Structure formats: C-alpha cells, structure tokens
Length: 155
Ligand SMILES: [Zn+2]
Image 1: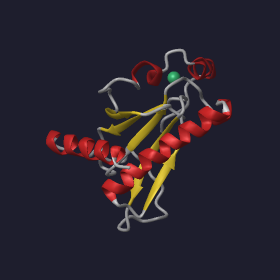
Image 2: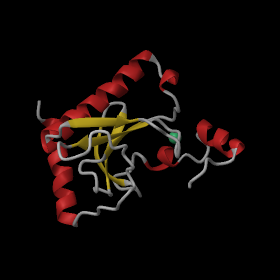
Image 3: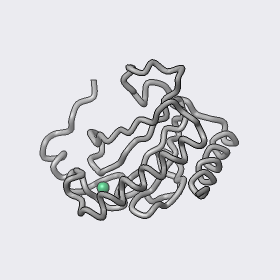
Image 4: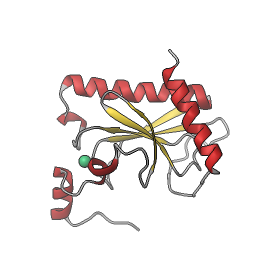
C-alpha cells in the first residue's frame, strides 16, 4: 500500500518545494497527459490513461494546497474554470454524471480530477483512477483532445 511521505518532506512539498505541478502543469505535454486548454485560472489536461473515458484534470496556475487559501475572486474563478471544463466533457461524452475529485494526497497543489460516469457504471463504485491502464491509439487520443477543445469554444 502506498504511504504518505515523511512529514518534513510533505511540509516542504506543501510549501511548493519540488512541486511537480508547479514545474510541468503548464506544458503542452507532461508525464500525466496533454493540455487541452489554457483557462483563466487553470490548465485543463487530458490524462494519458483513458481507461475512465474523459478523465481530465483542472490545475490551478499557482501553488496553493487548500481551497481556503484562495482569494475570493481566485476561488470563484477556479471553480468557473472547472465548470467550463465539465460542460465540455458533458458535451463530448454525454455522461450520467461528472465526478469532481479534489484530493492532492500525492501532490498537494490544487487540482480537480474530472471523471465522467456512465449509466453502465456502478454509481456507488469508488473511483480508483489508476486501477487499469487505458492508453488510446494516438489518433483516437488526438481526436479526443480536439473534441474537447471544440466543445470548450462552443458557447
Ligand atoms: Zn505546486
């Protein structure tokens, strides 16, 4: 079972020392996936692992670990970005529901995983996002990026 890192290392990471998301969340491609769009307060990214179709993440552009650390306009703006991303997912995937997961137990930089859930899913099933690896062929992954970008631009 994975464990938390030692408390002193965790405290440093919470301050932003060595934060992977500070380092690479803005990049077009990083180890997690490809950027869909640069939103106002955040970056919207499609996970490489698409075993849960539409698994995406909205990452705050600056380092903060808890929502209560954000100024009111930043907090409202970040959630508006999350809502905009979710609307694009809804258009593309037409899910039964979109799940919003703000955890940060591995990287404590505010990011929200968006996971479309479908009528065929068990609605009580707790999501383990890394339960399986679902790597799409490159053309299908690119098409998914394009569809989400298009859905973001549609009014
Ligand atoms: Zn960070």
